[in-house]
Length: 165
Image 1 (cartoon, rainbow, N blue to C red):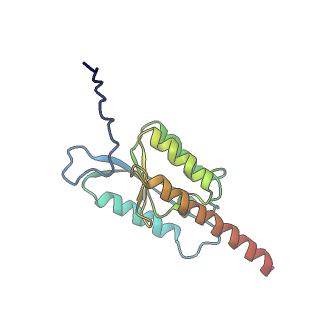
Image 2 (spheres, rainbow, N blue to C red):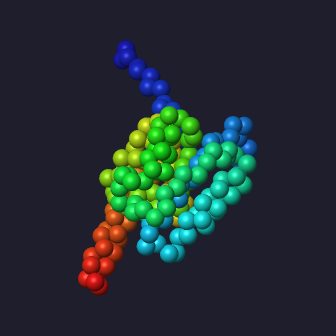
Image 3 (cartoon, one colour):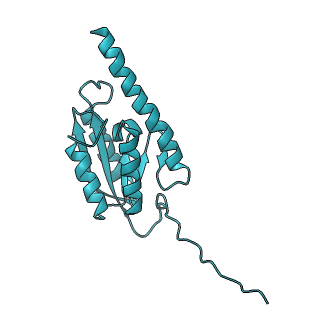
């Protein structure tokens, strides 16, 4: 008689908790505006995400992290981003809500490294504009594509800026 091996299902990481969930999810927001970014007001992003997170009955607002007047091409010189990642890795919250991949970072390696570290520690990121959740099965593929486009867009902006000088 053949031996049967029972393989237990892996516990699947969940996305957003349902509205009737008993436990509120601890959530933070992240806002970033570079010095040359006029359409994404720093104050507007901070106000929007603070109010948006507080309006959800299934979420507990923890705090806003932000960086004003800095480029998103790397994590260096972005104290708000660095502190957010550090706090997430210690388990202070389980969800980061941000406007878009380009607000999170404009470098594919920085984005993927941060997302993978966060995911390994049970912290999800929701990029609202693209509606990408990192615990979603296709999230990393979409993040790779979108962050590559964002990085290329930033490179093109710099190239055009140099030509205009």
